[in-house]
Image: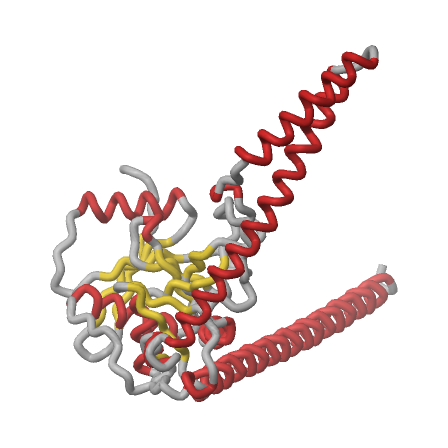
Length: 345
């Protein structure tokens, strides 16, 4: 029995040593994992910083290039030129396409130019000196002489196309009449001669009375050049200090301050009229991400009905988005309050 005790003590010591070694190994592994996680986090932060710097450089390049030409249609700021659309997109401004595609005009799932800008997007471009109102067309083509020539040429081409299509339509009508008469009159020679006389008379009457309707004219749409391209001389009229439309409405000013602050934080914004708010806020490009927030712009001293707050919170919950109450402050900052629906008590 006395000999067994030292042996047991030795076994216990060995087990303790093994446990200590295992604990040390686990601690070393945990430290290595923590170091790896920290390195990964540092790499991610560096990559995010690089992406932000690249985005800022792209925005600076876009803003430092030639100003974007904005065509004002009544009160709507429109962009027609492809390079203007690219420049605006490079600055993180989305807008909304309004035009129909030439090859598929009778649908509205995919749209094309022009691009309608939000008033806040137009104002932000103006502040950056990156947009200017396009001069009237009369100033660009010397009093409209070039435009009149283009209209006259277009009318001549339309008349020529109408005459050619009239001849083709008459030939189609005659061929259809010949097929119908030849299939209906088959028999003896006297009957065939009578049929020929009747056919000749029908063809002569068709020559005298046939008219091709203008509504049936096939029109070719010239989409490559639709009067939207400006020569370099006319492009020189664009200057970033041209006066744009001024909006003095307090609510418009609040919306713009919120738009500028969120855009400065790297978010993309579009209109949120369908969701009962002012802006839809995306964490990245709307072509790649869904909106995370519905921004509702309010002033700090504005009173809000509790039922309206409940309604917008419930709506945000139904569409799986968080409602942001955005209130610009006097110091230039914006206060944000998030609302999420959690049910009735």
